[in-house]
Image (tube, rainbow, N blue to C red):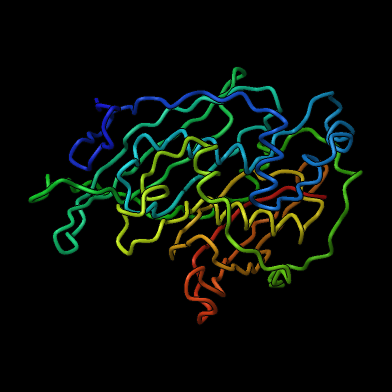
Amino acid sequence: MFDTSKLGPMYEDFSVGATLPPLPSITLTEADNAIYRAVTGDQHLMVADATKYRAASGGNGMLANPGLVLQYSIGQTTMATRQAIANLYYRSVRVLRPVEVGQTLSTVTTVLGLKDSAPKGDQFRGKVWLGITTSSEDGPVVEYERCALVRGRGPGQPGHADAIPGPSDPSPLADLSELVPGWDLSGLPTTDWAIDDARVDPLRDHVDLAAPLARLTFNQAAVHRDITLTANGRRLVYGGHVQGLAQGSLTRMLPGLATIVAWDGCDHIGPAFEGDLIEFRHTPLERSAAGSGHLTRLEVIGTKIADGAEGVVDPVDILRWTPVVWSP
């Protein structure tokens, strides 16, 4: 479908139903967990402490960070978004089962819909809606959709007008309980956190190592590597990097977090750049008993407090992430 020797595909190269050429499969190692921790500060307890994971799961393996699994999955979809201007949102994210170190991930990416966007000056572009399934040797582990804004050649537009859905509506927690693994969470710490009690993580964090994370996860989007392709001459940070920092913040605020089973959505509502300082606010929205713990739906807002080039700025929200997490 596409000539992978070129920087494309451009918007005009997509067709509904097409499957994108795959990027390499990846066998997860302990080093992947360590590098991801270095980039995001993620303190996921059962990833950091294998004895905690083995006690909870009853096995002898080591848990791969569920955030890392998503980062590799997203990276493996980016053959479609080499010419992305921006990733707009993720929707209907389901983590079907935990992944252990030593398992190998591969991803299939299918074009679900296309819709022309209004040109911006002489820049032609369109929305590309993608369906993604990432599997290990034991079957599917992650399913979701994403929508990207992709550069076109022009002049003119191809005339695509598919109905592309926006961010997904929240799924009932009862419908997500089947995604909870059969672990015993009694050995994990509990956190007294009432519904609608918004808490700001006092440890703000800055964005760095953005290009290494993109390279690590095979991310092909050129705007994360090449400043000559960006609108303002600054290398755009991959939106999933900000989400990774948000999950790292959540593991500090909820240290008993066992795993993440779903995202209602992940909306990148503003750009991030190397050196930006981000503050995260976490609000539990809903909670329900599930397995040996509880499922909690949260809203996580990432707010830029300082810009990597300009210094302190008026606070502006750049991320809205709505995960469903499992904890005691």
